[in-house]
Image (cartoon, rainbow, N blue to C red; front, top):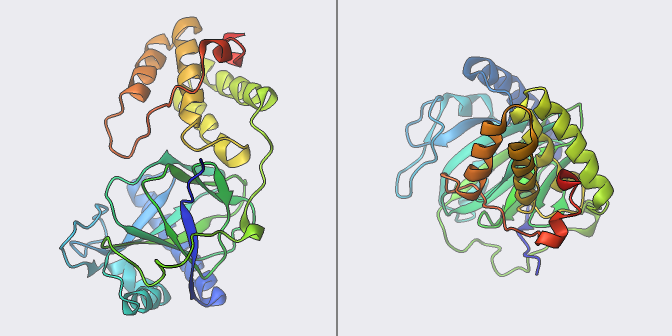
Length: 294
């Protein structure tokens, strides 16, 4: 049964002001990217426990958040935070998240329980996508979304141009002013994806294998992470695909066997709370037709 992991909430903010804020955020993220040498999923805090720009840790419950220097550069984002606080939300941590070109936030679950809100800041079209379980959708500038972090989810920019910018707010657990509303996603914002079939799986396998055999092992796995955003594959199920791929290369690859053996073991025994364990969806009969075993 599919779980509804996100719902559009009643508050709406000025799309033009959000777009202008996104432009500033992209400029700030470029500085953060250079200083921290990041290549993907750029984050920077607006409110945190210390008030320092370099403190990326989530604010623990019961600690009053403090604005960081970034907050002064994004006044409209702070207006949004103030407006949502006036709704009764006890906000404890806020950050800006930027997805770069052809970038992906791997499917995961949230490490710490909270009431998570996402405010889209720029136009996402259909290239910028979210997946919660097996539901794929987009967000529009100024929209406020409440999401369930315990459901496996991720985000991706499947395009080769443009940056996706969002405001992520964590509030204390509890009811929100919209809790009595039925969880829903506007039908026009759902993204139809072609079926995850043998043709799609084989295409991903071949592309990942080419990278793996050239020694680009991390890039090979990254290829797979786009699958739930481009095809009808549940977010958590991608790790079954990666596991089968890793097991195959651990046996067949002329080099890097040790890497893939360790990677397969780690996938089954992850060390971080946010990481998702493969669900072992494939029976032996299913595996016999997987591209990795043909």
